[in-house]
Every structure is written in C-alpha cells, then in structure tokens.
Length: 535
Image 1 (cartoon, rainbow, N blue to C red):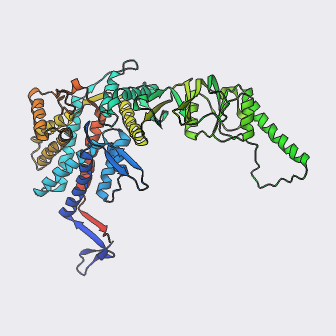
Image 2: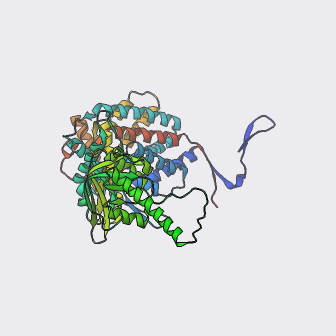
Image 3: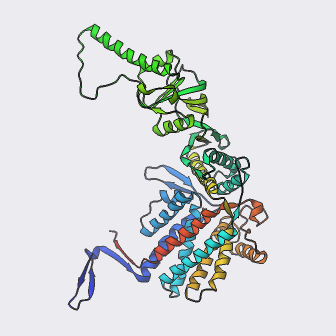
C-alpha cells in the first residue's frame, strides 16, 4: 500500500493489485468481524456447564479428539478468519494463565459482541461502546472482589480445595469419578506446593496414561512412573532401598571423534581388541558397583555384552529413559545426573525406598514404579481408561483441576459458580449504569445483559427454560440480596450454590471478564479490513 497526493494536495491510497483485494469499511467491517466472533462463540456455547455437550474433531491425519475443553476445541479447529483467530487466542491465554474457564470466556466475548451489534444498529459510536464496556468491566471486577469469600485450608484439611476441583471436573466427561480425581489432583498439588511462598511448580507433576483398566483405577504415585522395563528379563523385578545411578553416558567402549580405521590381520589382534572391550565394560560395571549403586538408569542403550555383564554382576539396569524423565527421577530421588563414569561418587546416587516393575493385563506391557523417594517433591498421576481418547480427555480434565488447586493456593478467594457470580455482577453493573450521564450508560447496560448469557447458556444446556429460570434466580437474588443463587443445572432442588458446593476461583472469574472485554474492545476498534480475495 502507498500514499499519494493529487494536484490539490489531497492524499489518496493506492492499493497494489486492487482487483485482487477485497475491502470492508466502516460499519460493514465491524458487522463482519462481530459475525465471525459470534460464530466461534456459538460453537462453544453448547459445551458450557455440567450438562454441556462434547465436540468431536478430526485432525488432518485422521486422528480424532473428543473434548469439551474450550481451549482444546479451538486449538484443534482450523480457523481461517483473523477475528476468529483472536477468539482462539483469547481462550488460549485464559488456559495459560488460569487453566480453567476457557469455554466461559469465549461465550462471554460472543455475548458482548452480540450486544455491541445492537448498539451499533442504534447508531452508537464503536469507541463509545468500548469505553462503556471498559467502565462496566471495572465495576464487575470490583464487585467480585467484594462478594468473594476467603477460604481457609491447610495440608491436613484440604476438603475446600477438593470441592472447588470437583466443580471444575463436573463439566467434563469424567464427572462420574470426580470425587476421586479431585482428591488425586489436590494431593498431587499439595505434595509439590511450596506453601510458604504460595507457589506450585506443575512441571513436577507428571501425568501418565495407559489404555486398559477403568477410570476408577487412576492412582497417585508419590514418586515417578517410567514407561520402561528392566533391560534383561532375568534381572530382579523389585528392589527395596535402592541406590540409583543416573547416567547420561552409554555403556559402550569409547569411540574416537575423528575418522579412524582399525586393521586386524591376525587372530591375536582380534582377541586383544575383544579383551580390551570386555575390560572397558568390566570397569564400567565395576565403577557402578563400587559406589554402591543397586540400580542403573541410563539415557542411552547398552551393548548386549554390557547387558549380560550387568545381569551377571546383579546390577539391574533400565535403558533408553528420556531426558525429562531423568530430570524428574533426579529431583525425586535426590540424585545427580552423571555424564561420565569417572565422576560417579556415592553422594551422587539417588535413593528410593522401592523400585518395582509392574505388568498390565495380557499385553506383557511393563512399567517401572520408583516410590518412597528421599524427596517426594515429584509425583505422578497414572490414568487408566477404556480407550486412548478417554485417557487424553482425562489428562486435560486433570490439568484443569491441577490449575484450579494451584490458583487457590496462590489466592484462596472464591466466588460461587453456576452463573451466580455473573448474575450478581450483572445486577451491580446495571445499578452502576445510572451514575453515568453520557451515552456510555447504554453500553454499560448492554454489558450487564451480556453477563446474563452465561447463566442463560447453562440453563439452556441443562434442558431448562432459559429465560424463565434466569429471571427466577435473578429475582431471588434481588429479593434476598444474597449473591449465592445460581442455576440449578443438576436438578438438586436448590438454587443455593453454597449447599451444592459449586465454587470457582476469584482470579479465574476476574480474568474471564477482563480478557473478554479486552478482545471485544479490540474487535470494535477495527473499521477497515483489507484482505486478499479467495479465488
């Protein structure tokens, strides 16, 4: 694009290859952008809440994903439109920051765009709408701050954490065992949490899955699970009080770095070479024995000869263990990763109370459990399930639950779920609109209406009458002035979310409102779209 001036000094724009470009300006551009944003929100709307539907996505290479996690659905979708891509980014940033509420944030942004469209039809300027939304979001976030409740927990009494994780898991496919999975997630987070600093490193929690068994067999291992078995079938399957040498050097004779050629012309020379090699192996195995190692975990493979020697010397070994797993084993057992045999010392060995090999079903598949470690700061969640898709979805659900537990350790304020927080914010924003004299008050009221879309979608997905249910809950909140009433999705018979134990984290809710408002403001400010036309 270039800027040129005519003979009167008026600027005009020259578009290169103008016939191949399509251009939308002014209100048309905004309408097209809003339509794209709404289309993405409409896809996710039906998968919100405990009765939400799942989506099935087929990738380009034929692999199928079934999920109702907003971020996953949007990641897998092949989106072309730039505005729709913004919605995908929105859901991704909610996933990175909070880990939960990825569907709700897109539904919320879609509702805000829908309301903005109505205001544009009334002739309101998009910047005014954006400013009104900004004011309203500030009111909503402050109101959430006021109604939030702190809730106390400690390492021994973690029931509140479990309740909040159960709320997250209730909208997933795994909701029939949400109690046990929530407990596993909370125990895992508390095992690796640094309570004084209020920080949790989720990298220390490894999530492994294996097809077979049932979802109820999912377990938490205070230690590391490695998808490998002993390198020789005759090595012992269980080692108690193990001293582990963690090596990143191969059990092979050293090779010169430069190109070399060895000429062997007599049997004696060959024998000498073989003996030399055997001596290397002997020394390597002996070094491991000398420092007191009772198990060797190696990043590389071994020669068959080394394997045979290790077996004879009663030194069990595991080979081809990945780098990330090695690091986790080192953290858990308190050992050091050793790059050369010369550097092996007894202090560098990791210690574990029990290392055992466990086989599953009839498939002869075996895995290695490293438990009762010296430093139990690394844990593994081991998921079982009927098929691969189920395990993948359970992994995503567990990730959401872990993130919720982490957020509560960072900031232990909660608000009530089931749309209760949105309804009370909507009422607060509506009341605040009267204080603003300008045109913005229409946008603020529109924001209040958009907030109602989340409880409305919850009611719709649960098969209730959306408008009737919403207005009943709203009038109940106004009458009793209590912000705990939400949509009764599970037909328990009460709208009080305290009784139903439906909680959400305060920072998660605030983030949803702020992120959705930011993206909508960005979309409203675009008034000219120039794109290459499709052939």
